Image (cartoon, rainbow, N blue to C red):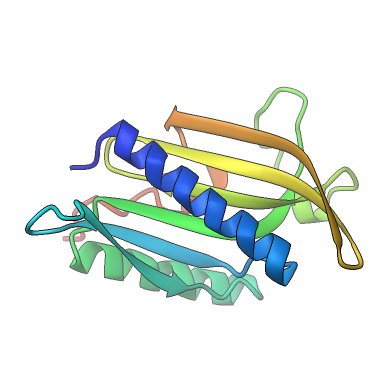
Length: 163
């Protein structure tokens, strides 16, 4: 089982890697990382990577179905998603049914979100890209609670029995 402290450390590690990719490559490709416990605990967790295809809703659904299947088949103790995406703030913090990509107040962000059977969390880093220049904006971190609502919904039944 992954503790909340271990979860937070992996989330921060993935954030650092995503920010390096953003600085170097000017984008962050969508990836999932599946944490499994190691037999000899050195290191305690292995992170397997899976490229995700978020080019369309159909591709996203296929990628996430594959992710869930791999996570279940490998007894994952944590699942993390690293991606770029649009975010938008709502007045009361509740999802208003309008996708961020369709909102006029949307902002581009690097989003790292994760979930375990006992905890979740996310880090989002807003950025503005002008040519080769990237300016960082607001960073939001939530540890030891819910992951982002979107990732929570996408991965909601990952640890539930399938039969």
